[in-house]
Image 1 (cartoon, rainbow, N blue to C red):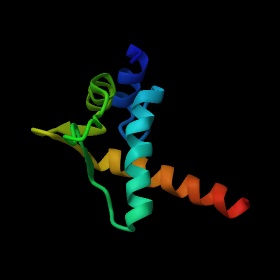
Image 2 (cartoon, helix red, strand yellow; image 1 turned 180 degrees about the vertical axis):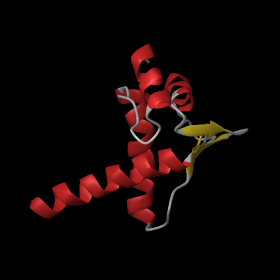
Image 3 (cartoon, helix red, strand yellow; image 1 turned 45 degrees about the vertical axis):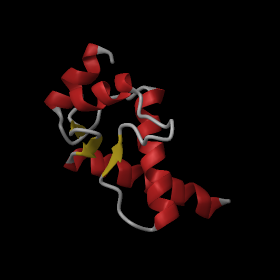
Image 4 (tube, rainbow, N blue to C red; image 1 turned 45 degrees about the horizontal axis):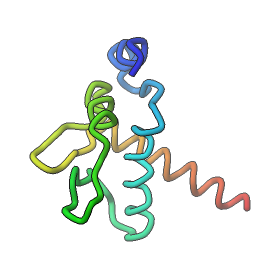
Length: 99
């Protein structure tokens, strides 16, 4: 992750830094599960035992940006991370409503 992104996150914690595609994929995965289940998603599993896993570089990037905290086999979204996930879902719904 570019250093300016970390500095931006520290200077303005309400505005997430630019994220890599791998980091965005973590949010896309969570958004899929939230939309599919109708239940709030507050984090993702690092390794599901069936071959799926979160990219470690993406997790590190999200952690450094203050968007997640790491637990044993789980990555939990911080309040700001949950806000990013919510914004992504709202954007998807907006695009879907225009179709």
